[in-house]
Amino acid sequence: MIRVVLPAHLKNLAHVTGEVKLEVTGPADAAGPVTQRQVLDVLEARYPMLLGTIRDRHSGARRAFVRFYACEEDLSNESPDAPLPQEVCTGKEPYIILGAMAGG
Amino acid sequence: MSGVRVLVGTRKGAFTLTSDGTRGNWTVDGPHFGGWEIYHMAGSPADTDRLYMSQSSGWFGQLIQRSDDGGRNWRTVGNDFAYQGDVGEHLWYDGTPRPWEFKRIWHIEPSRDDPDTVYAGAEDAALYLTTDGGEKWTELTALRTHPTGPSWQPGAGGMCLHTIILDPVHQGRIYVAISAAGAFRSDDAGASWLPINKGLRSGEIPDQDSEVGHCVHHITQHPSRPDTLYMQKHWDVLRTDDAGANWREVSGELPSDFGFPIAVHAHEPETIYVVPIKSDSEHYPPEGKLRVYRSRTGGGDWEPLTNGLPQSDCYVNIYRDAMAVDTLDPCGIYFGTTGGQVYHSADGGDSWAPIVRDLPAVLSVEVQVLP
Image (cartoon, rainbow over all chains, first blue to last red):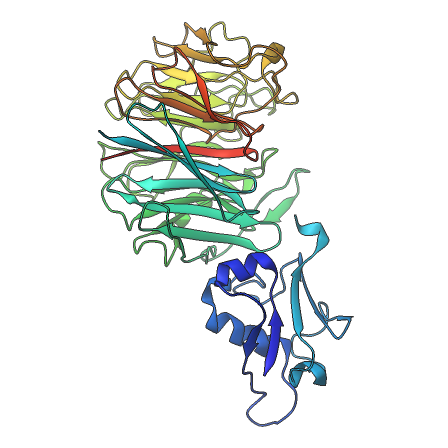
């Protein structure tokens, strides 16, 4: 189970409060850790109103003023296919999506 | 008694202002989607409960909201505004080629007779159409791929398609305006486009009579005179009486012919309204006096309308989509300012009063007459 923290505006859009909890499975041929891409795919599938608000609908690129944090690390510029930290995969730590300070 | 609903898009959320037909006692509702830029809201002429909203932010991009109950509840619909086919290039501010890049939707124009059919104007300039209530948007590519497209350049606010007029008489005729490309007309529902800028003269471009490159700020039309259009250009107020084939300046003795909005009275097709702004670098009224100017002769002769408007120390701007008229009798006029005031006149402009004074900067104002 992955815990996702959304910024306030996206919580409002998705009509959720608090953290979003997602069941995300890793690649079918591996029991390894999940990736940011998989988390975002599942998030957008459950909340289609978020399509295009976090990453480009076609290229999948992170929007310029959106950031991804976890375990006190900035994962924004990591490969979307890189494994997420084990603490995120086990639900011990949340995966945080937020708006950059420069975006407003 | 019928009522009115004013749809106000602001820099930080959407508001609705409602009143009965006397337009004397207003209820303010909002903000909806607080913190988001609401470039435009529009209601369907075919169903006053069907509303559409362009919602965007620097963080989270573009969304379209739809309401089926007059704005009480909203639902996110489609926001896939992909350019179709070869994206191509236009000119950037420095004159170098730059690929078209979607930024936001500036204007929403619902069909006159189908609530599910809506046009949307984008930055970078493109025209989109939905026929399923906003779920799927399809670009009408002939505009962006017009042979003059590679020479289009953005105005200071971006290369935005901000005006869409669906002709009420000529089936399939559409007018659009783009800053700073100019005005265009289609007679085949968007399958092909004709630049209609003859008579426009713009000192900001090397060839003042160029076919394109003019910074048209807004165009309006009275439904009873479909071949007559009124234009507020960057500088100059103009009119055409032959569907854009020829324009002539009607600025007359306005204190400044720079401005953004232009509107036409609902029942008097030769009565038009503008709000003079001092200059392109001084986006506030001349002399700090907020004056709407009215012409009852379709331009040329103008009178200042000041009763109820601040006549000293006023330095707000009025954006191009921030003026609207209702169809009641007497005709109501509404406009919003960058200072967050929404003013209205229930007597065709003779007197004015604020509906609300302290909203975020107003980006757009539309009005619906309710059954």
